Amino acid sequence: MNIKRVLERMIEERASDLHIKAGTPPTIRVDGRLFPLDEPTPSQKELEAVVEQILTVRQRQIFEDLREIDFAFSIPGLCRFRSNFYQQRGTIAMAFRQIPFGVPSLEELGLPAHLGEIILKPRGLILVTGTVGTGKSTTMASMVQSVNTTCEKNIISIEDPIEFLHKDDRSLISQREVGLDTASFHDGLKYILRQDPDLIMIGEIRDIETMRVAIMAADTGHLVLASLHTPDAAQTINRIVSFFPLQEHEEVRYLLASNLLAVISMRLVPHRSGQGRVPATEIMINTPTVKEYIMDSAKTPMIHKAIAEGVNQYGMQSFDQALMSLYKRELVSYEDALRFSTSPSEFDLRARGIHAASDKTWDQFEGEFNR
Image (cartoon, rainbow, N blue to C red):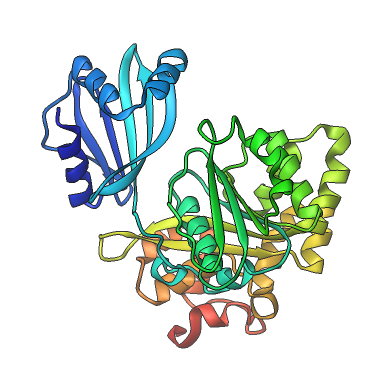
């Protein structure tokens, strides 16, 4: 198998991901759907040759010991790829994700301009959340690039692996890769406060140690940007608290209420044209009301309502409000907007213009399209 040709085909077909395993034709994911490529089915021996071609000596040893490895690599003139090699049923399998060489702007991604204001705050914790493949890494890279092009900051990231490559502009950026530049997220973060950071970017929070240091860094006056695999703001709060022992829950809620700046949650919705996807973004700002809801576990589910009501005053928006805007601007179909909505029945009523006359929180998302 010619792996370079298969990766070129991936780019040509605008695929986000490529999956390869022995005995099955290479398969790509385009706009969320899987399609087989018209390429030869690889054998185990051919995949072993790909391992030899792509992995370094050290990476091959890790793969041999652990039977899986995360890494990233670039093909000059083509693209950068985040990859995972693993074993299934005793044979090699591979997953590749396309990462553009350039970092797209918030505007190019179709993300709210408000994110560019949030990332310029001097201190606090910003979390970008969503399920796998919803654009968290791209959103974070775009936010970092927004700082890089507008401010003089010292930005330090810890990633596993490094995905988007940043070049110094007005800011100084140091990107550290787990396994190459530091042993672990925890080890990298243990000394990061001595490296004079203005902005700390953590590729992904996976455990209690990383979460603890992220909160501590925000509590000591630093700006921290990190990702978390949670579907929305309210569940993000519960997930963070669940990292910690029960006896620490009250303290963690207090620290979150004091230091959390915003939670930005992502969903990718198929474009109405059938080509590409567009982001639906929930934005939660840590307002006085949200602080109260974070500190009281019984009120945490009310965060969703606070987001929907905080549009005009705080620049927040719920998933359903974001989806309504996409639908009214004819970027997504009604069926897909309904499918991705948090409250389908309420969304359906709003789309048909059925709501209380006193409810003005959706006006900017419905605008002149109301009828």
